[in-house]
Image: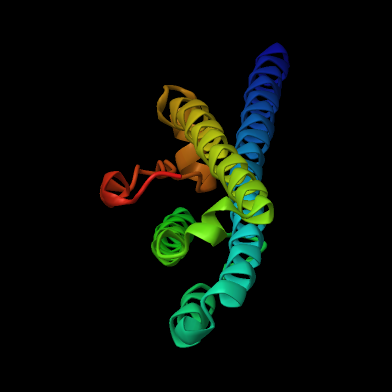
Length: 182
């Protein structure tokens, strides 16, 4: 009888441990997913600020309307409730390309570059860009914590059994160094 109680106690302890590990992994996974969504939110805000710049540029560069409309069509920001790291990276590359094109148009019009609305909106774009950078860092930090949990023994056994794979980090866009700075 005591052997059965010991076996039941051991099984209960193991079950409670597995439940605890699963709860911790789910919480860490949700933190990673939230961090990725926060990047997307900042990208949407940045895109909105860039669209405001496009509208302002149209007033100064009406003969470049086709170029500016191409810029607007260039980027359809993903508002997916569950963006993937590759979607986030694609959004970032497109937003950087959009920024570069807007700056190129503005360079041709000194009055536009001196316009207070333009300057204020460019500051907003810079702020959103910084927010995206910080959100990317936060995401990579949360992924580091999650991946550490998933890869460390004995949690790795439960993570493998319950289907918690290692998450991918967001990589820095190598082409970004080529973009003009604000």
